Structures are given as C-alpha cells and as structure tokens.
Length: 481
Image 1 (cartoon, rainbow, N blue to C red):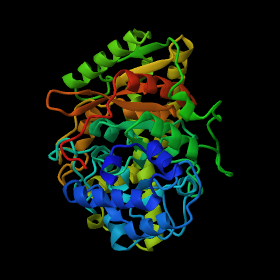
Image 2: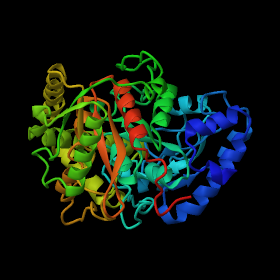
Image 3: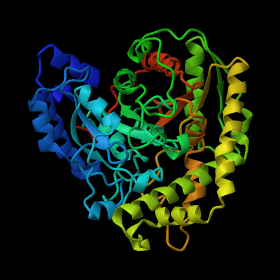
Image 4: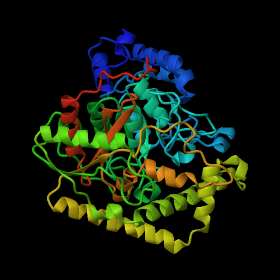
C-alpha cells in the first residue's frame, strides 16, 4: 500500500490513519523508504531522524488532525528538542549545535500528530535563493537535477515535489517559501505577519520580514496545516486576526467575483527584464482567472517601482545578518574567522557592521511607505494582486555563487530572479505561489497572488478555485518516488 500512498496528500493520509486503514508506523516506513531512494540524487534531507521518527510513530501519538503523517523540518529557525540545528552553517555543524527546546511551531506540529523524519537543506542562514550550502553540498531540483530547487526552503520543496513526504516545514524572509514552490511546481503560502508565532526564541524575524509555514502539493494541506499552527503565543508582540472559520473550509468556498490587478513586467529596481516564460505564465493565469468570472486589470501599487524597495531590503538583511552573527560569536565564545563562513554570508556581515544606524532605521521606517501604497491599492477597489512568482525559470546550480574577488556580485542577479517575492515580506501581507504553468522544457513556472494583511482566507478560496480548474496533482518530475 505504501507505493499507492506516495501521492496522497497529508490530509488524505491522516484520514486513512483515522479510519484505521493504515498505521502511523506504516506511513513512516513508506516515507523513509522514499527518502532513502531519492535523497542520494537530490540531497534534500541533510539530517535524517529516522529512528526518532520510528519511535515517535510507535508511541502514543497525539490525536491531532495529522496523526501519523510523516513530515520534514527545514534546518532553520524551527528547532526541535535534542536535535541538530545548523541553519545551513558549517561552523554550527562542526560544533554539533543541538537545540535544547521545541519552538512553539515545532510543539504545535507535534500536537497535530506529525512525525518528524529529518531536517532539510537550506543555504547558510537562509540568505539566498538557492540551496547549495557548503555544510551539505548542493540540493538538486527533481524537475532537472542540473538546476536549483530554489531557496531558502529548497530541501523541503525538493522533498515534497519528488514524493518523499506530502508537506514539509518552510520559512520565508524574502520569498523562501514561494521561490522553491515555484521552482519545484508545488504550493507555497507565505502567511501574514503575526499569523504563526516565532516564539519563544523571537518576537519577530528580520524586523518582521520573516515568517514560517510549509510547502505542500495541495492547497488543502497548506490550509489545514495553517489551522494547526496559527495563533498567538503569550509574549508575542502582535498577532494576525483570528480567522472567521477554519482555513481548510475556505479552500472549497466560492471567492465571488474579484477585481485583481496584475503585473507582466518586473519592478523597475530589478536589474534584468522578466523572462518570457514568466510573462507567459502570468498572462495565462490572468486569462484563467477571467474565465472564472474575475476582473483583471494591468494595475499595481505604485511604490513597487520605487528604488527604495531595493535599498530597504538590502539594509534590513545586512543589519539582521550582523546581529545574528554577533549572537553566534557570543554563543561560541570567540571571533568567527572568514574561512568559517561562506563568502556571501561574510560579505553581508561586513556590510551590516559598516552600515550607519540611521540607514537601518530609515529602512525599517520606509516599509510603511510600501505598506501604505498597497493599502491605497486595495482601498481603490482591488481585492488581489497577481504577479509571476519569479523573474526566471529555475536557475542552474551555481548561478548565485559568490566569489571571493566579487563577494556581492550575485545581488543584482538575485534581484532579477526574485523581483516580486520580497515585497510582501516588507508589507507583511500573505502571498501564495501556485504551480499553474510549465515551460517548453518541462520546468515549473509559478504565479503569485497577494492579498491584504490577514486575508489568507481570500487567497485560499481563489487558490482552491484555480486548483480545481487546472489540477496539477498528476504532474510528476523526472526524479520521483
């Protein structure tokens, strides 16, 4: 039965367990077999936790909505007690860093009944849009193993797309859920700021840019996992408004006729024009939405084209990198050497240490300009914004690698590749990448829908409608279980 279960989503697998048609241990053994088969090719799972997973599945699991479903955790932020947490960093790996606690999110995953089978690949500290950390080696895209699955949740996306597990933990500070979702042909929802708690280790991540959720093959898995994990933790500085009904119920709820703005070009700060495949994907999605009764207009918030978008993003990233590495130095009790970090990480750290404090404060304040521009867009009558998820198809491995003689050279290429995704990290709004298009080479090209803050319900209604109109569940990458 385990081969038949490969492409059943997490909700479906949990239903089988609840009916007694399969045991958690059988689900887990099937997932372990798939990981062992595929991981030598893809390098998605970098810290196996198979024996702990087997013991967890055989124990008295909580009677949660995902009881017995196998799950993977990204090796970044979401910590589990007694397990390695390297954040993609060779130094932390060499020191054998282990988390002493479960974070709030990990505890909610456990309470939902999910069984943890390992940690997935991420770039060092999640700082780029590919998953090629020197700590693990490159992770490969199951649609084309010469290409990257994206980042920073590339290991999770490759694992889900190839059939290792139905869904996996991910997080997003500049697009790190949506980028690999697009590159791997799966669903990636970035939630509203404050929707999922980062406690107890943080009140907010990257000055509010970073949030956590999952990548999945189906919209309903993303919705149901959000039901299991969303909500305030005491001590959080803020929280998104509670949903009116379960998010899972929104997936089959009619969205009504919506007014949707869309873009078929990159914002002006991007250094390269939008790739033709991405233009084709967003135009095709606009036609599909029109066929479903929605109104589409080529309109977007004006601040998207402000050059301050790039400056704000860069300054927040380098400031947060400087703060993070300062904490790592305090933890290890000594100065970090350049050879202990990757070229890109070291360069961002040095930039952050040199940046004037007023530049950082100006960056944090300018996010308000961007958020107000989106507020004006919605108040003028628009419900959603449609864009390509990325500026190009999945990149070849090595395309974003920094060289010692030009450590910051990948920045312009990075912006050209992710011209849309960081904007919602700055506004705090929810955004979802959906696998609605494949190019002539058979590579997935995602499209992104953006909603006002707190309106995941609206995104999930439209996403469910699109999934029904153009199902993607039957598509399989060349490397699959």
